[in-house]
Image 1 (tube, rainbow, N blue to C red):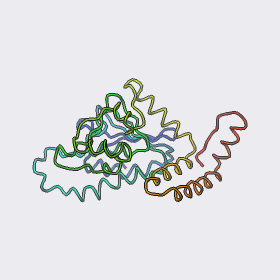
Image 2: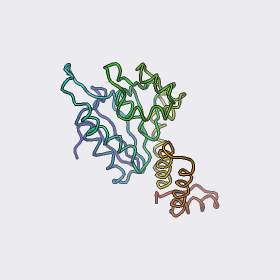
Image 3: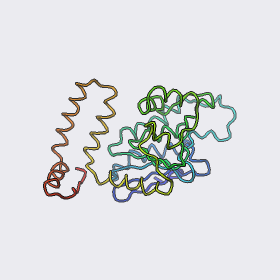
Image 4: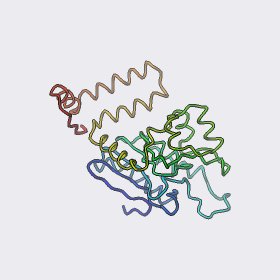
Length: 259
């Protein structure tokens, strides 16, 4: 597939998907959503063991591209969310390898929730997060009402949604919205190092972690303990578990193969 609005690079098990409409601050149009729907599930099939989503230029993603449209009455937002946004959010949530959002700049509206859908969010200090929806008479979408309360609690989630104020990367870090905020000069090296670490790690164990942690919000203690026993039993049959134990005994670093 030839890409018009994103770029895609796969090196040493790390797939980097870059939103590439810098003049539009990487606002998402129909073409970009179609390309994301294709590439996000495809990357693990290509051999990626970690997937990074980032933006070109000075923004990560400014959300929905309304262009110069002044008459919003003919926009079917329900269809847009069901048919074009949800498959993207599902692909990130269900991705069989760890996902990182490397937030290089503004992450606003649906772009904010696209970033927060990743397993790990690394942001540059100059970046910010904005639930911009009420500024145009809407409510958070693209998973925002699900992600935010789980990341930051009800009070902060409600304030972010209602007031639509910018949240700096440092504040997002401190309130638990993201994994880490780093100085701009260290940003690329940091997310690259994080991605390489995950790509060289025990892929099946990562899959089980993703599934178990996400399920924990919907299950009771006993069910979660059952999940842990089942998943750990499956991890115990992998090559990477055998390699991890051997490396521990031999006092060396393990060489995981993702199987």
